[in-house]
Length: 345
Ligand code: 5GP
Image 1: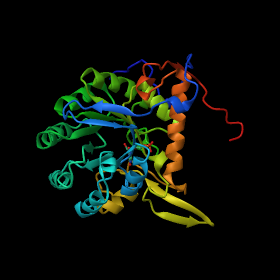
Image 2 (image 1 turned 90 degrees about the horizontal axis):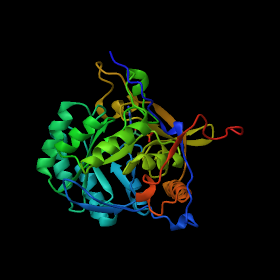
Image 3 (image 1 turned 60 degrees about the vertical axis):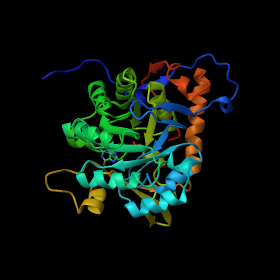
């Protein structure tokens, strides 16, 4: 048994140190990034915030609304090829370039992925994720998908350490998805005791990926716009959000009326709710590692995405970054023992 002694950090353990800045207004900040991806060579420009591939977040409706703000959606894997065909024929590249097609890792998933990608050349992102990205099976699957789709941008995960990040990039991933246990409806840390504080995971994996010309998605654990900014500041190229974008008109969750108020159901993809819906219940060899919660209904996601983007722009002005690209270079985190003042709740 070994114990690593160096401290690992979550979002709540740090704040940005303000820096002198020539920026007068947050309207001067550009949140767009332009990337050329390592293996596929594809280029993409947009705001690198991604709605999570959860079936009460990553819907087609979410993709259409977020595309207006340059942001992305990892569309969940429970739509049929026919539903994809309708979506693809109704939308142009401005939406389709900002969509990731999520895929499981079975042979049937491989075939379904191929059928979806054949629908349009404007689809350019594949999102392959399993809860435990340390499995050999994932590495082999990424190699197989890379061989079959040399021109697609492949994201694979989830992992939290540099070694595995490098292995996935060498296997053919352009982007590695980083995060085990930080999610708002995730119970992995309590069920298994496994996890890694998310900001340190981002810092360490970002470093490893960038060294090889790869990129990372900081996935999970953001509870407010400040956390999204911290993820970018720590070196995330993309930030993926579940809970912050759940509960909206576009999220696709079930609406529930209770005591005269409107709520929307939101659940983890390995919660009992998700397994009952998609896999006929929780198999007896596994435990659910996700929660189900009711969120107050929040209306259109457009207000929320504007709020998040406004927050990140403001962070950039505090540290003097005219573009999101400069944020991590201009970031000094200070370790803190307090965050916001909670006198009024
Ligand atoms: P959030 O932004 O809500 O904090 O985190 C979203 C992320 O949580 C997702 O992108 C995914 O990686 C992770 N996640 C979603 N459902 C589950 C689940 O049921 N169990 C676990 N362990 N993680 C989940």
